[in-house]
Image (tube, rainbow, N blue to C red; front, side):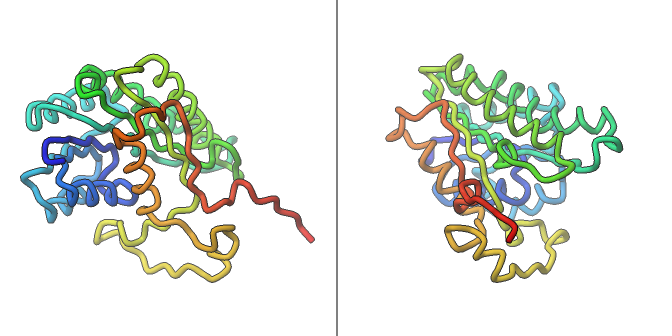
Length: 249
């Protein structure tokens, strides 16, 4: 493990931060890109000898190119790429500007094109793995989520396209989380006191709201060389919610 490297987009907070913590604990070298400099600074509470942080925008090509270069210069290799970075701008379509639409698409979907393009030569040398974070919003929606839902549907599609294009040297898979409570993985200045209600948990067939660790566990599975026959797949981790039929009585 000590010679393996994982690169994570949007690793400053939330699910991304949980991924950083786990893989550092397992002895990986970890490289993180995020736009939030204060959340990156808090990551330095971890083992900084094995950690590289880069403040940059995953939707900007020169930032991604520089991050990839710094990662390889420091760690010499990369084994796993996790595309986790995402934003949402949810408002009625009549109020949503084209610039806002494009920003969501560029960050959530365009970034996967950029990171895959520039990390691919390095991942192919290690027979590595790309893991993209989509969402159950790729398959079902609430009001006013057109940009986010479209971007996440694109993440599912680019996953199987990349799996065909980059295989067999690189495997590409996708995870679609449902409701994941990231409260404990927010940066200190952004932590809000939020108590989940019993009904929040019980509406899930699994009996609880998800935790970032649930997503980390699937990333562990998909990144393992023991599971080298798994590629082009999407795994829904939502406590069963997308399988639940809802009627109004």
